[in-house]
Image 1 (cartoon, protein in one colour):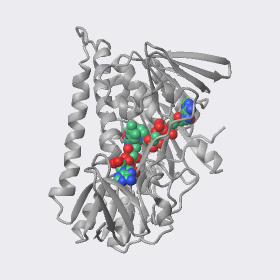
Image 2 (cartoon, helix red, strand yellow):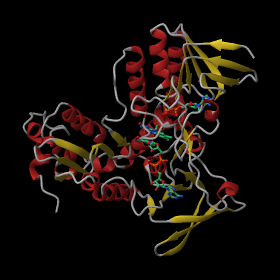
Image 3 (tube, helix red, strand yellow):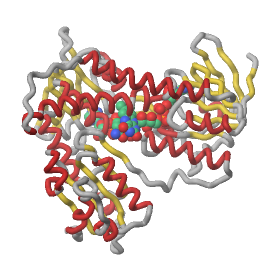
Image 4 (cartoon, protein in one colour):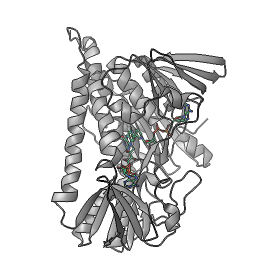
Length: 465
Ligand SMILES: Cc1cc2nc3c(=O)[nH]c(=O)nc-3n(C[C@H](O)[C@H](O)[C@H](O)COP(=O)(O)OP(=O)(O)OC[C@H]3O[C@@H](n4cnc5c(N)ncnc54)[C@H](O)[C@@H]3O)c2cc1C
Ligand SMILES: NC(=O)c1ccc[n+]([C@@H]2O[C@H](COP(=O)([O-])OP(=O)(O)OC[C@H]3O[C@@H](n4cnc5c(N)ncnc54)[C@H](O)[C@@H]3O)[C@@H](O)[C@H]2O)c1
């Protein structure tokens, strides 16, 4: 098999690989991007964008069903689910076309190969192309950006019964009658509210005693309360031991809980119990690349693997799995390779948002983390109903919680309110700029904005009890 030579090979068209290909190509490097499925990876095709597009339709339904509270009478509501899915498809097709344009028509030095890449040595890849042919490629730099896939728990009868992953549910043609969701993490929560608002009965089964285990108890309780008021049912602290499906397609899940065995029936089953890395079929052994016990690729703060010239970016290395983190991995590698600038992937802020309504925006330390790390902190919690904007717009559910240190510097925040992600981002900027809570308390924000809440939020700063 002939070998094609490049300056850099990028495996996976993910959130780091795509901008990296463009940057390297603009710097005159000859690059090949190898993608086995869809350009744009999971975020665009079956992750962030499709879920947020569907959530926007679900939120629109909520606006209509709550319209009478605002003095507006509506005459019935009909969901054209095909059109809902069609809208989502159009959005992601446009996004994917944008990625394709950047990688092909706009770039002269990039070759896109549609196929599966495997290492055959430390500097060589074999690509099994989708047309059935194969190629051998070599380069001094190889970037692995192969992402993750759903991790499926080993439960008696689960594989035989069949189940949905988020990829399947995003392309569902009909609204499930009763959707059971295994896992109360980010995916479970976002999909639960989405399908509840589309009209499904929704039950979340979660092994932990609380949702979003890493978050503070009061924040999780507020999230659960909100979703329960939407009509989502929860079975927490439950271990599903058996799954079966009858001839009519109805699932029965047998779960062990602290109050005894429970049987739950539903028409559809979504498994959202976390992710596992796409590394098992990469031939990493041929290159001698080290992985951890879960298969994630081990990297240093500059995202270098133990093999010289080979980097791993995005969800495929251990750490938080978010698009903005994968994108920042691109910056780390770009600066190191193209600008000889040191940039660390370890010491960076970690903002994230759960896109339920209201949103949960998080940055910095939670109270739980502050206690674990024995940080001397003060905390302020303000129910959202105290905020003028909340009352005016009718979005009074939620809370704002911030932690500050003894010098009034901001340590972290959990903002659970309408546009919570945007308010959290303001706090993130304040943290980055070294502002104290006094600065925010004394800043003149326009009235009546959500941001104005930052004037009052710190009034009740207290030492933890
Ligand atoms: C339902 C859902 C919702 C999400 N929502 C959000 C959100 O709101 N905000 C957020 O920040 N994050 C969200 N995420 C997480 C986010 O999608 C990922 O963190 C992000 O896409 C980073 O991915 P990546 O760059 O590591 O690679 P990916 O985007 O996963 O791309 C990896 C690519 O590699 C390809 N590939 C794998 N193996 C090979 C191989 N051997 N050869 C060739 N190609 C290969 C795959 O086909 C894939 O296209 C969500 C995830 C899911 C599943
Ligand atoms: N808004 C966002 O930023 C967003 C949205 C969706 C996904 N994501 C990313 O995707 C990743 C994957 O999301 P996820 O929700 O699948 O994972 P997750 O790790 O966030 O949550 C998985 C949940 O499933 C539970 N669980 C595990 N095994 C179980 C079992 N057998 N039965 C019942 N519950 C079980 C876990 O306790 C956990 O609460 C996240 O880590 C996140 O980084 C981000």
